[in-house]
Image (cartoon, rainbow, N blue to C red; front, side):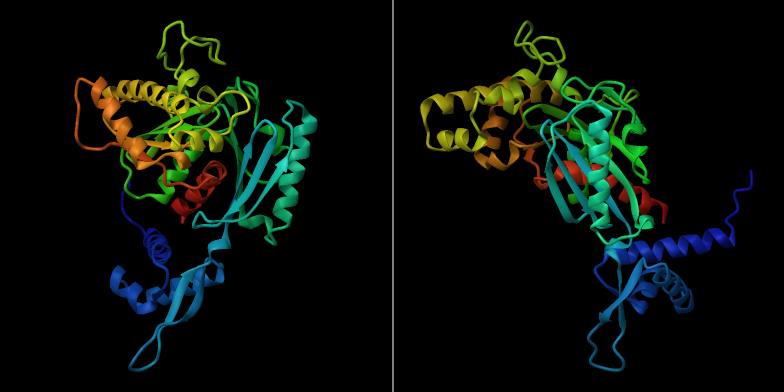
Amino acid sequence: MDNSITFKDIKKSNYSSIYHLIFQNEKLSKQEIANQLHLSLPTITQNLVRLEKEKLIEKSGQFESSVGRRATAYAICPQARISIGVEIQKRTVQILAIDLRGHAFQQERLAMDYSNEDRYYKELSQAVQSFISSLDVIDEQVLGIGFAIQGLTSNDGKKITYGKILIATGLDIEVFSKYLPYPCMFLHDAKCAATTELWVRNDIGDAVYLSIGPHLGGAIIINSQIYMGKEGNSGTVEHMTIIPDGPTCYCGKKGCMETISSVNALLDDDETLDFFFLQVRSRIPAYVKRWNSFLDHLAISINNIHLVLNSEFILGGYLSPYLTEDDIETLHEKVNEKTAFPSNDPFIYISRSLANGVPIGAAIPFIQSFLNEI
């Protein structure tokens, strides 16, 4: 096998290095690029001209200078490529567009009752296409559309491999892609939220992400990557048995973590998180007792998982905005009471991702693939 590096390889490497250096910095001058990459100014100039012609970068003003000519500043064009994230829920759909930096620059929420019928998939596809048309972009700028769903997906995103909450098992992405002229894929909503967490933080190596919403979801992060496992169901801690013969889970089994550590398990009928935590923070005894019981059960689960995966835990989802540092301290104490290996080092944290982390996370993989290929 010929492992020699060709002139073409070097050119591509220079092109990639220059783009990514500009991407990592807000603005850079030609000389700064040359200094950091140890490349000649003619090589830098040639690649900047190409990147500018391809509309991946642009001139963005000039740097201040006390002597001589002011240097031109170069920056990436964030909307040179965009990606679309769609979060499908029982009664609503959220659609948003993100740029190459992962920033959501336009979004829309629609009232749409889910139905496993072609009529629904066609109507939603038309809504997505209408949303894209409103963005004033050409088709070539749209990298793809990620559909976040409450269910497990194949590793290639083409099929729903397990769907008992909403979308049916076995559904093929063709239900959308036949109406949309862009790459489409399904993604598990909890893994989407974890993907956004990875995007907004650069300090995660290994972690367990718990998305605590109406339903519970999990994701395993290893070496800063979502670990899918052989069949794509790695991280489904929601179906780990915590209470044998406990409440019945939607999966048909009893006592799953889902039945005691989801928002549905926490709240009574017609309660909201706003109302519940107003009572908790007001120290109403009945609500404080329920919250402590919830944290007790969550601590059991975290301890069990932590004994297998000795890593950080990140608590996200609908519950995370209501969590306080006192709650996290209490949770650490409860875990230490239950574990064989108590530790003073904190390992449970509140998610830093935004409220719309699920649809953003559904769109990020297309952005990441594009950046990896430059």
